[in-house]
Image (tube, rainbow, N blue to C red; front, side, top):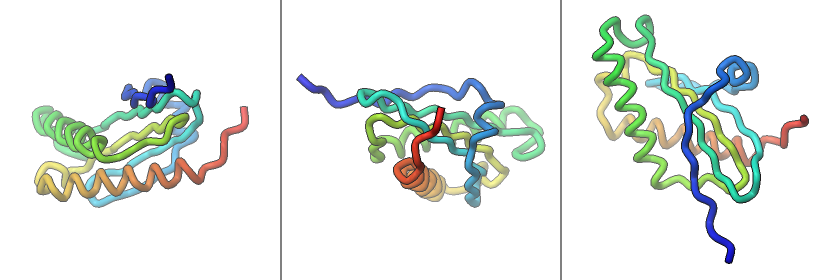
Length: 131
């Protein structure tokens, strides 16, 4: 019996390797770094991180934490409607800016959704890495 692969969501761990291979994409509310790789055919893996710095977002930790929560919740909501192909690993890092604090929720969802669509498009067109 062949079952559908389950999407696994995890944190990015090795940032130095991640930044070396990452592709940048900018939106109005955040800068996104993306990497893509292949994994076993029975897996779908999404690794992500959210960065909200003092300089980029706000000096108060309460505001930076609110930005992190908003981005994580928007990502989780958008992932319900996006299908990552089996056998792919996508790593996304969102570097927030201060616009995330005041942006309406629907606009933030649209920005995250368009970033996910770009990532999926690049994931499908990126050739396999050579080891």
